[in-house]
Length: 185
Ligand code: 5GP
Image (cartoon, rainbow, N blue to C red; front, side, top):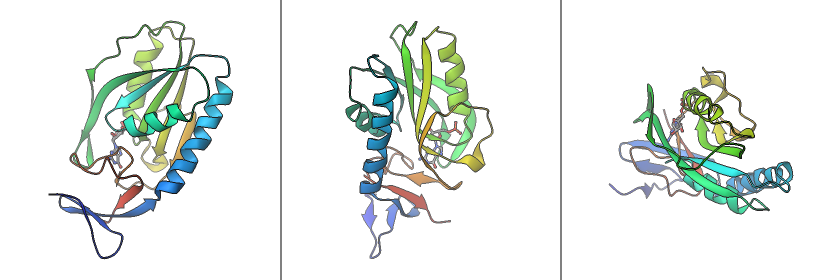
């Protein structure tokens, strides 16, 4: 089923209805701010952005282009989610092929929910001997946090509700929405 707009600004994806949370303009403005912050933080360094697939690919792509300076990008696929609930397990599906030793790493996540994914992944990265690690997440759900994770920069803190858009999906749909939408419960 294709997503379609209801008479109001609601969005339907499969069986669920979503309402706007952050507009495209608001998202772009905030991502530009994060890009400027990272540009200052990594002045004269060549950081390696590590984008956690699939959800962070849209955010990482904008963030990199808002980064003023030399940088590289790599991708890793991890997963702990099925449908709208965390499955409780984190699996590395596709690993990084780059040498991380002595590199300045910027881990780019779409959303930190329980923090399990990031917690697991940061442990893995630390064992590779990088020069530094910084974590940037587009969204964060402070109420859902269950793991002690280091989040250095967050785009927006949101309520503990399921969201889609700007790379985030519900059963495969919604990643191409330029803004963020929240589930109606
Ligand atoms: P965590 O490991 O922090 O519990 O969950 C992180 C991952 O779960 C995110 O990278 C994302 O893929 C998925 N996730 C968590 N909350 C949401 C949400 O509200 N919407 C969507 N689409 N995915 C979510």
